[in-house]
Image (cartoon, rainbow, N blue to C red):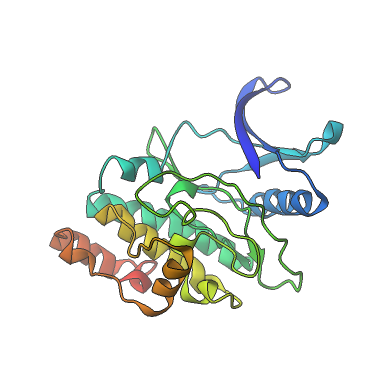
Length: 250
């Protein structure tokens, strides 16, 4: 629904990231503004900060910090991560999610392409386009089609945000999201678990030639234990057991 550009803030003389709404409509604009507000609410060192939102000249856009680096998806494309490195990233994302959950905000689209890693190593959670305040009675704004994701051997539509009651990215949906049911913070925890699984094994826990098959797999199938795909050092297992934020992922 939007495009992100590297831009220059003339007033403060600094580089920024500029996200522009491409497919404008009242519904799309409402969701776009909701994304900016949700992300701006979270003042956390591991959430990409929003500086400004506007619709000047009839074009809706918001300005955020530019992240010099790459997504976790790009890192995984080069091969699985060492378990310790994957746990470090997951723990940081868990902290960012925890801050959102404390405000009633569920991200609903946690996945490798929405986790950014700066060249210096800082990890940031981005893209709150599907975020929902579970304390609010507002209905969902239907998302737009067409968000592109990386090719990684999955069905073409497995990485596309869907329209309708099923909101999110099929490859990372919790069972309740896959069933179109109301969600809470546990859906983000599930998606982070799927992301951690993919980071250490190099592949998502479930694949299918169809979106319906992928959704069904999340609801009824059991994933192959990661240790059967990649040997896990005992030190990494011990760290996962000690981290209270990640116990739910074990």
